[in-house]
Length: 491
Image (cartoon, rainbow, N blue to C red; front, top):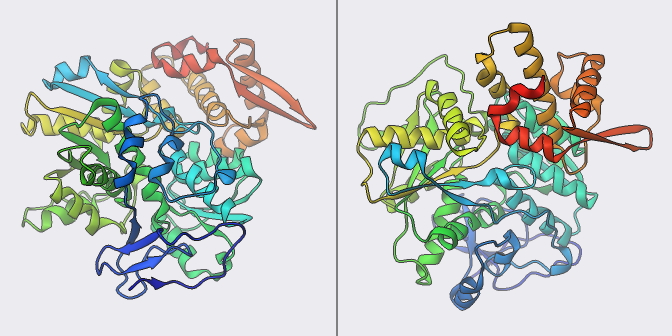
């Protein structure tokens, strides 16, 4: 018998009887009439039970250069009048030549989610959640995240004139905070990690009239992110392994859901091995996975991780992620911090991909697993690159440390930070004051001098709107950021 979670119906959204949430633990079913993530009876996690059998033909018709909404038939239905898009999805799954040869793999692929509008995979989620919020007639959204989801929600809600509140931890990449500011999101800092920020949202009744867009607390997140699995199969057929960075574990569970749905309707024969990766400095899922096999866990104390995008102390999806990994016959690995920056640089120099630290973990994992002879030379392996290194400007500083002249190197780094903030706000533009609010330590006068230099070199342009001057990145500026080798030419 289907049970119902009672709420007051909002706006124009009509509940469809086929739209059902299923408890992962007790398998009881509930009509989707409110944003719920836990079973009210056993507190197991909820996800959508969607029958895709009748959509086989539509999957076959999807082209390789698809967009996110091309898969709308496989998502919880939303009236087309409420659907919004900035061109998310359809990101490339690029075959590596140089690194494939290094690791002696048949093929190594990079699923490059940095190509989304705000430079991360979370644009898929924002497109679905903000569209859904509109359909339920919400005027306010609240989100707690490590940054990428908050930045994406801010951008998409700004597009629709919906008020956005981001509850963020103190430990967050500055570029992601900058995006939230640029997209006019209200920001509240709570605690040191995202665990503190999520607890704050759950305990605070002031958010009852906000649409809940925290990734762990809204099951639509899994639906949006599973389209990454659909695209991988559409672009390269079924790989042997997919390597996925893990924070709360919901991204890995999302891909598992996507692959299992395709297998259930016989569009793929086998599910790829899912390999979850974390930093040794913060690896609760990896530790829990190996603890079950009585392996000795090497705990790293007093080391701060630079992979802030996956810094989660108590991952909500830990048990489910481990279950998915085991059922796919995959594994997990914790990467030493010292390998992260080197992996970022390898991606830049060999593949032209500028990845944030959380994403570069996947390449570091390939390196370590290859050393352990975990791959067959015939294997096709996909590394998921979830977000851009432009969101973590201190990475620019670390990579640029090879500059020998201290003063000159410092000026280059400052220009790179400013250029990256302008690029991250390419949809709406950004003011000098907003750049100052993000970078903090640089004076406003110095920022405007750098802006003048960047504009003279044709890397940015300006536009007057009322009393404000907005700055936008040009094609030349994008080329500079796409090819880190030529960043020295800023001076």
